Length: 159
Image (cartoon, rainbow, N blue to C red; front, top):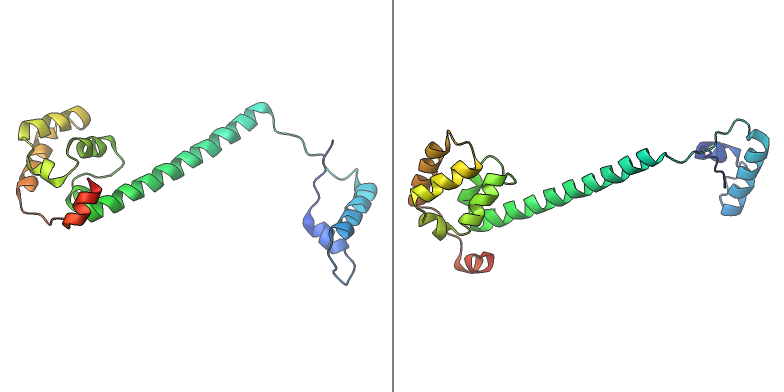
């Protein structure tokens, strides 16, 4: 069935001065516009399949970006409560090396017990191999320095 879009302002201007608005009144106005001005109305054409596919992919991408943002924010909130030092060690939480690091050292005590060689190998595998040794040394020194500890209840629930 062909569809002819009509600007809502045109319908609004065609109402009687009382401004009463009901579906029946609007249907009558739209019917009059269709009979009177149908040659001026442009028929709505469905999008070609390629455009429909692009719209679907774009919607999917937007949903994935929103999910990634939500999960990143949840991770940041968790780290702030439990492992705040980890937030300062890498540029972005959602990058691969940060997630690999957190997977290898999920608790501050795991990180404190890390060997420098293991940390260096981890950073070389997922980060800039040239700067990995320097970064590993910096992180290892930070691991040995005193840090604020999460409340034991928070530590228990987050691990």
